[in-house]
Length: 336
Image 1: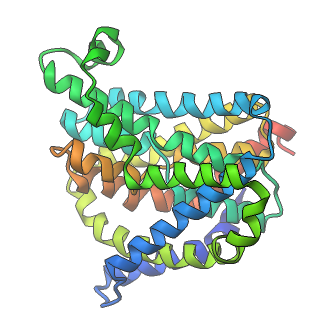
Image 2: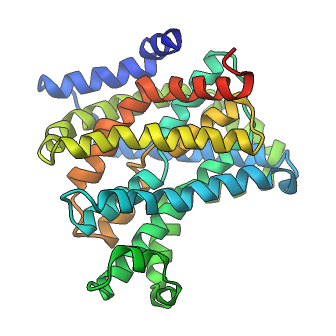
């Protein structure tokens, strides 16, 4: 496993991220305009959506129901587990919801880095995994915001009774669904997934030169910007105690490992199980924060964004991705 970690540490994706962090820590004047950052995010969302749709068009949906079920299971239950774990910390319910939505959802950039890692290692994976990114993006956000809205109306009830009591489903606000599903990140992913699925191979000659061939280059620029942002968030995270920092490392280890196990159970290859682990172990800092900003205004962005971007994201880039890969190899080949 040490060789895999060293390989990942020396990859340009990790190094460019670390460069961004160093630039911020030493107060460099290096900046990426917000408009360019927005454009880079949009590019990655479109590229992943199109890749997923085109890949999904090659499969009979009934033959991949097991992986889809595994992805939805992770997306629905991880936020509830995070919510119960954070209940034992000193943070309030709104910030627990922020963490539940962030860690229950996925990091598209971490997923993209994992794909590059597998391709560089000559490890194949199921093409429909790109489609599972979309499936795991919104369930955690919807579940988390729903629980928050229910709790707002039932502040005297304990979290456990709210999370599992079906009578409260009638309280769900249609605006919650709108904010979670039709937010720009999820909308672009779903829309491009559908476009890729309908167009299938006919879309490849059109989208390949821009969205496929230039993907890694754009990812490097995006990771540089993420490094700059992560460097800014590290000091904010320290303010909230070592226990939250520990959770930001514990969550990817536990959920990522569980994701690899689920991936192996539903019959994915080593590469596919690795990506399932990445999806389960990553934390959103694009879609989830966008939804939380408007729906859970009491949640502090320096907590959920600081932990996901400042701790979990670099942890996955450096240690998480090769760790999930190693676990997937062990489960498939018995440690060979």
